[in-house]
Length: 110
Image (cartoon, rainbow, N blue to C red; front, side, top):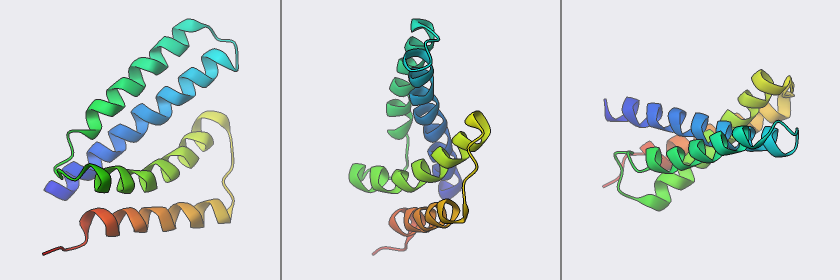
């Protein structure tokens, strides 16, 4: 159950971080206003909090593993929110990152 909780926290963290960055991008680059930017800042702050809820107490390991989730999540977000179509190399790279995340976070250790 700990692995399932950890994966769920990674997904929530990715939505908050990627979504927050996207909202700021929309507010500033797409001129949608400061309301979008402020919502993005709140979302990014919440991401920082959610990351602390991981069962592991190793900050570096959690953040390194999250990097793989961030890469895959960013491509998925771009596809859904912006119509970006990842190519096979994007998908292959994301898969490699997710495998790396699994090894870093969930490999059996002594």
